Length: 153
Image 1 (tube, rainbow, N blue to C red):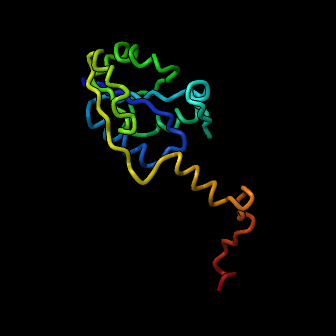
Image 2: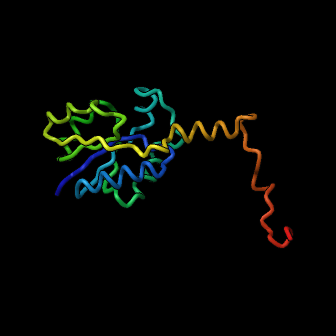
């Protein structure tokens, strides 16, 4: 069985994430996804997530291409994971190109997959912020929407 692993935050799960997971799974038989914990995101990446680790884990576990989700708690963990999970292929987006070549020394193939160019969690956050930039709040609530088609005739 060929085992593949990828790492990421997976906050605001979108079709770019799904594309990456689908292509990663196509490289093997068993896909492990290591999701950055809230602590690792904040302490090492200075990144705050909208969803908690447990929520992001539940979302990624629901994706049919994913066989196992594990926490990513440090940069150093990757070397250990290659051996602990008997990994054949390490996969990550090509925005990290060259950063994980050292994992080849652990006996794994390193693959940098092209990102889905028109989408990213960062871009989604910026777009939503800009759309609400008048005062930072949505201008429409469910209470303000009339869903009765008879009233609109």
